[in-house]
Amino acid sequence: MTVSTENALERPRKRSGRRRPGRELVVEAAFGPPARALVRLLLPLRVPPPAVVLANAAAGLLAAFAVARGQLVLGAVLLQLKTLLDNADGQLARASGRVSLLGRYLDTEADLLVNAALFAGLAHATGRPWLALGAFCALTLVLSVDFNVERLYHEVRGEVPERPTRSGSPAERVLERIYGAVFQPQDRLVRAVVSRRLARILPSELDSGRRREATLPYHDSFSVVVLANLGLSTQLAVLGVCLVLGEPSLYLALAAGAVVLLPLLQLRRERIARRVLAR
Image (cartoon, rainbow, N blue to C red):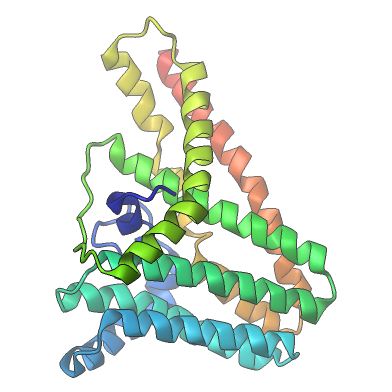
């Protein structure tokens, strides 16, 4: 994803101040209420939001270690703790007026680090390293498409995101460079595919009004809803269930298989745009 402030701001969508067109149901039902209660406890203590990010990363890394050792139930519990903290850090930042670019970079990069460690632990626990690698790549792609599809949904509707505070600190600059190197290629790839597929549908001679009529439904809320419910909180909840059942390989198969939904959603979007043009 790009190294710009706007992209760093928006990647942790579950904690964004802007209302999503779709909800991640696991967050709404299970993690949102306790996260809000935790924020109320932390606010008077003046806990810095990046400390909560580091705590959720620590819980995730401990979960990965537990899974690698075969302590699957402990890993499942730690993952849910990680998700709770992950849903609290942005709420705490907004409630305390301390939303920062450093915190957003740290949050995104910590999630990626934990995911890599977690799938390495799953590879060790299951003895299926290639399936674990495929599932990790699939999850990374799904999360990247989720981020970009939602961002494009808002962009075509002229919705401007909030901007976090830039401190210019050395730590922020380092995290910004890492962010650009790791995520920018993903964003460019996803956006290129989405844009080119739409360009193939829209005739070059089409006037701006008709072009917008087809573009808005192409960037549809249904896709945002589906992808939101393939988000990280949902993924870790499903993984937790599989770990408690003693079936970590089942989660790897589910995570790898989720990527099949991406071309299906894309074909649906294209069909909707063509239908609008055919009217």
